[in-house]
Image (cartoon, rainbow, N blue to C red; front, side, top):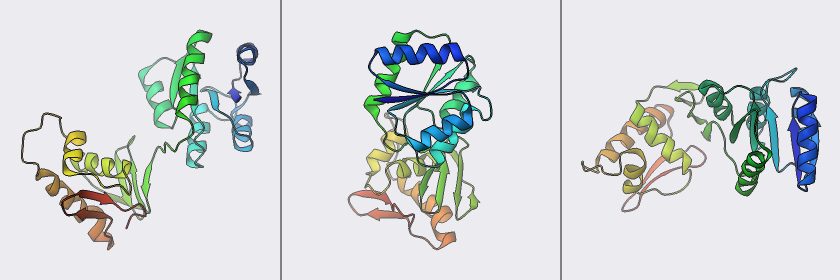
Length: 225
Protein backbone atom coordinates (compact mmCIF):
# COMPACT_ATOMS: atom_id res chain seq x y z
CA UNK A 1 0.00 0.00 0.00
CA UNK A 2 1.44 3.35 -1.06
CA UNK A 3 1.35 6.47 1.12
CA UNK A 4 2.19 10.05 0.15
CA UNK A 5 3.90 12.21 2.77
CA UNK A 6 3.85 15.94 1.97
CA UNK A 7 6.13 17.50 4.60
CA UNK A 8 8.88 20.11 4.33
CA UNK A 9 10.62 19.26 7.61
CA UNK A 10 13.25 16.87 6.31
CA UNK A 11 13.87 15.06 9.61
CA UNK A 12 10.16 14.47 10.19
CA UNK A 13 9.57 13.36 6.61
CA UNK A 14 12.51 10.96 6.80
CA UNK A 15 11.31 9.60 10.13
CA UNK A 16 7.79 9.07 8.81
CA UNK A 17 9.12 7.31 5.73
CA UNK A 18 11.31 4.99 7.82
CA UNK A 19 8.52 4.19 10.28
CA UNK A 20 5.85 3.60 7.65
CA UNK A 21 8.14 1.40 5.56
CA UNK A 22 8.77 -0.70 8.67
CA UNK A 23 5.00 -1.22 8.82
CA UNK A 24 4.93 -2.44 5.22
CA UNK A 25 3.91 0.74 3.40
CA UNK A 26 5.58 2.11 0.30
CA UNK A 27 6.21 5.82 0.83
CA UNK A 28 6.63 8.78 -1.51
CA UNK A 29 7.78 12.14 -0.12
CA UNK A 30 7.15 15.66 -1.38
CA UNK A 31 8.65 18.75 0.27
CA UNK A 32 6.43 21.43 -1.27
CA UNK A 33 2.75 21.95 -1.90
CA UNK A 34 3.03 21.90 -5.72
CA UNK A 35 5.17 18.74 -5.67
CA UNK A 36 2.67 17.03 -3.36
CA UNK A 37 -0.21 18.02 -5.60
CA UNK A 38 1.59 16.67 -8.66
CA UNK A 39 2.32 13.32 -7.02
CA UNK A 40 -1.26 13.00 -5.74
CA UNK A 41 -2.54 13.56 -9.27
CA UNK A 42 -0.09 11.13 -10.88
CA UNK A 43 -0.29 8.17 -8.47
CA UNK A 44 -2.80 6.21 -6.44
CA UNK A 45 -2.35 6.30 -2.66
CA UNK A 46 -4.26 4.69 0.19
CA UNK A 47 -3.77 7.84 2.30
CA UNK A 48 -2.04 11.21 2.08
CA UNK A 49 -0.25 12.71 5.10
CA UNK A 50 -0.36 16.43 4.41
CA UNK A 51 1.39 19.18 6.35
CA UNK A 52 -0.40 22.54 6.45
CA UNK A 53 2.53 24.97 6.33
CA UNK A 54 4.28 24.13 3.06
CA UNK A 55 6.45 26.07 0.60
CA UNK A 56 4.75 27.06 -2.64
CA UNK A 57 1.19 26.14 -1.65
CA UNK A 58 -0.38 25.45 1.71
CA UNK A 59 -1.79 22.08 2.69
CA UNK A 60 -5.23 23.71 2.84
CA UNK A 61 -5.03 24.66 -0.83
CA UNK A 62 -3.58 21.30 -1.88
CA UNK A 63 -6.45 19.53 -0.14
CA UNK A 64 -9.04 21.91 -1.54
CA UNK A 65 -7.69 21.46 -5.08
CA UNK A 66 -7.71 17.66 -4.88
CA UNK A 67 -11.30 17.61 -3.65
CA UNK A 68 -12.37 20.05 -6.37
CA UNK A 69 -10.83 17.60 -8.87
CA UNK A 70 -12.83 14.78 -7.23
CA UNK A 71 -9.76 13.06 -5.85
CA UNK A 72 -11.13 11.36 -2.72
CA UNK A 73 -7.92 9.79 -1.39
CA UNK A 74 -8.16 10.00 2.43
CA UNK A 75 -6.17 12.98 3.73
CA UNK A 76 -4.71 13.24 7.23
CA UNK A 77 -3.55 16.78 7.98
CA UNK A 78 -0.37 17.22 10.04
CA UNK A 79 0.36 20.53 11.72
CA UNK A 80 2.09 22.25 14.59
CA UNK A 81 -1.01 24.43 15.00
CA UNK A 82 -3.61 23.27 17.50
CA UNK A 83 -6.16 26.09 17.36
CA UNK A 84 -9.83 25.34 16.77
CA UNK A 85 -9.98 27.43 13.61
CA UNK A 86 -6.99 25.63 12.11
CA UNK A 87 -8.76 22.32 12.63
CA UNK A 88 -12.01 23.71 11.25
CA UNK A 89 -10.32 25.00 8.10
CA UNK A 90 -8.53 21.70 7.56
CA UNK A 91 -11.77 19.72 7.78
CA UNK A 92 -13.82 22.24 5.81
CA UNK A 93 -11.37 22.15 2.89
CA UNK A 94 -11.86 18.39 2.64
CA UNK A 95 -9.41 16.71 5.02
CA UNK A 96 -10.65 13.53 6.68
CA UNK A 97 -8.71 13.85 9.92
CA UNK A 98 -6.30 16.17 11.74
CA UNK A 99 -3.25 15.36 13.85
CA UNK A 100 -1.25 17.92 15.84
CA UNK A 101 2.54 17.70 16.10
CA UNK A 102 4.20 16.17 17.99
CA UNK A 103 2.34 12.86 17.72
CA UNK A 104 3.17 9.24 18.49
CA UNK A 105 3.68 6.74 15.70
CA UNK A 106 1.05 4.48 17.30
CA UNK A 107 -1.62 7.19 17.09
CA UNK A 108 -0.61 8.08 13.54
CA UNK A 109 -0.89 4.45 12.42
CA UNK A 110 -4.26 4.04 14.14
CA UNK A 111 -5.62 7.15 12.38
CA UNK A 112 -4.25 5.91 9.06
CA UNK A 113 -5.83 2.48 9.48
CA UNK A 114 -9.19 4.10 10.20
CA UNK A 115 -8.95 6.21 7.03
CA UNK A 116 -7.84 3.26 4.92
CA UNK A 117 -10.84 1.24 6.13
CA UNK A 118 -13.09 4.12 5.08
CA UNK A 119 -11.62 4.04 1.59
CA UNK A 120 -11.93 6.55 -1.22
CA UNK A 121 -15.69 7.03 -1.42
CA UNK A 122 -16.75 10.51 -2.48
CA UNK A 123 -16.82 13.06 0.35
CA UNK A 124 -17.29 16.37 -1.47
CA UNK A 125 -16.96 19.59 0.48
CA UNK A 126 -19.70 21.16 -1.67
CA UNK A 127 -22.82 19.11 -2.35
CA UNK A 128 -24.10 19.22 -5.93
CA UNK A 129 -27.23 18.15 -7.76
CA UNK A 130 -26.80 19.46 -11.29
CA UNK A 131 -26.53 23.23 -11.00
CA UNK A 132 -27.89 23.22 -7.44
CA UNK A 133 -24.97 23.67 -5.03
CA UNK A 134 -24.89 23.62 -1.22
CA UNK A 135 -21.77 24.44 0.80
CA UNK A 136 -22.05 23.16 4.41
CA UNK A 137 -18.98 25.16 5.49
CA UNK A 138 -20.23 28.57 4.38
CA UNK A 139 -23.94 27.72 4.68
CA UNK A 140 -24.44 28.93 1.12
CA UNK A 141 -26.93 27.68 -1.48
CA UNK A 142 -26.87 28.55 -5.17
CA UNK A 143 -28.73 27.50 -8.30
CA UNK A 144 -27.38 28.12 -11.81
CA UNK A 145 -24.78 30.43 -10.27
CA UNK A 146 -27.36 32.57 -8.48
CA UNK A 147 -27.32 32.79 -4.69
CA UNK A 148 -30.45 31.45 -2.99
CA UNK A 149 -31.43 32.82 0.42
CA UNK A 150 -32.67 30.09 2.77
CA UNK A 151 -33.36 29.93 6.50
CA UNK A 152 -31.30 27.71 8.82
CA UNK A 153 -34.04 25.07 8.92
CA UNK A 154 -34.56 25.16 5.16
CA UNK A 155 -30.81 24.74 4.73
CA UNK A 156 -30.84 21.69 7.03
CA UNK A 157 -33.72 20.03 5.15
CA UNK A 158 -32.05 20.68 1.78
CA UNK A 159 -28.70 19.40 3.06
CA UNK A 160 -30.34 16.17 4.22
CA UNK A 161 -32.00 15.69 0.84
CA UNK A 162 -28.71 16.36 -0.96
CA UNK A 163 -26.80 13.92 1.22
CA UNK A 164 -29.37 11.31 0.16
CA UNK A 165 -29.39 12.35 -3.48
CA UNK A 166 -31.62 10.19 -5.66
CA UNK A 167 -32.93 8.20 -2.67
CA UNK A 168 -36.40 8.34 -1.16
CA UNK A 169 -36.46 9.67 2.41
CA UNK A 170 -39.57 9.47 4.53
CA UNK A 171 -41.10 12.31 6.48
CA UNK A 172 -39.98 10.51 9.64
CA UNK A 173 -36.40 10.33 8.31
CA UNK A 174 -36.37 14.09 7.79
CA UNK A 175 -37.82 14.76 11.24
CA UNK A 176 -35.30 12.48 12.96
CA UNK A 177 -32.31 14.01 11.17
CA UNK A 178 -33.27 17.68 10.99
CA UNK A 179 -35.41 18.13 14.08
CA UNK A 180 -34.78 16.65 17.53
CA UNK A 181 -35.41 12.94 18.02
CA UNK A 182 -38.02 13.79 20.65
CA UNK A 183 -39.93 16.16 18.34
CA UNK A 184 -43.61 15.87 19.20
CA UNK A 185 -45.06 18.56 16.95
CA UNK A 186 -47.04 18.14 13.76
CA UNK A 187 -45.01 15.96 11.34
CA UNK A 188 -46.61 17.90 8.48
CA UNK A 189 -44.09 20.63 9.31
CA UNK A 190 -41.81 18.77 6.86
CA UNK A 191 -44.28 19.45 4.04
CA UNK A 192 -44.18 23.14 4.90
CA UNK A 193 -40.41 23.33 4.61
CA UNK A 194 -40.32 21.25 1.45
CA UNK A 195 -42.82 23.68 -0.07
CA UNK A 196 -40.65 26.62 0.98
CA UNK A 197 -37.63 25.00 -0.67
CA UNK A 198 -39.51 24.35 -3.90
CA UNK A 199 -40.47 28.01 -3.99
CA UNK A 200 -36.80 28.99 -3.65
CA UNK A 201 -34.68 26.42 -5.50
CA UNK A 202 -37.09 24.95 -8.06
CA UNK A 203 -39.90 27.19 -9.29
CA UNK A 204 -37.87 30.38 -9.88
CA UNK A 205 -35.53 28.31 -12.08
CA UNK A 206 -38.28 26.29 -13.81
CA UNK A 207 -37.10 23.05 -12.19
CA UNK A 208 -38.79 20.15 -10.41
CA UNK A 209 -35.91 18.63 -8.48
CA UNK A 210 -37.72 17.95 -5.19
CA UNK A 211 -40.22 15.18 -5.76
CA UNK A 212 -43.02 13.99 -3.49
CA UNK A 213 -43.78 10.28 -3.63
CA UNK A 214 -47.16 9.71 -2.05
CA UNK A 215 -47.01 7.38 0.91
CA UNK A 216 -43.21 7.15 0.70
CA UNK A 217 -41.62 10.56 1.19
CA UNK A 218 -39.38 12.88 -0.80
CA UNK A 219 -36.56 12.56 -3.29
CA UNK A 220 -34.13 15.09 -4.71
CA UNK A 221 -33.32 14.29 -8.33
CA UNK A 222 -29.65 13.45 -8.78
CA UNK A 223 -29.35 15.75 -11.79
CA UNK A 224 -30.99 18.64 -9.99
CA UNK A 225 -34.19 18.37 -11.97
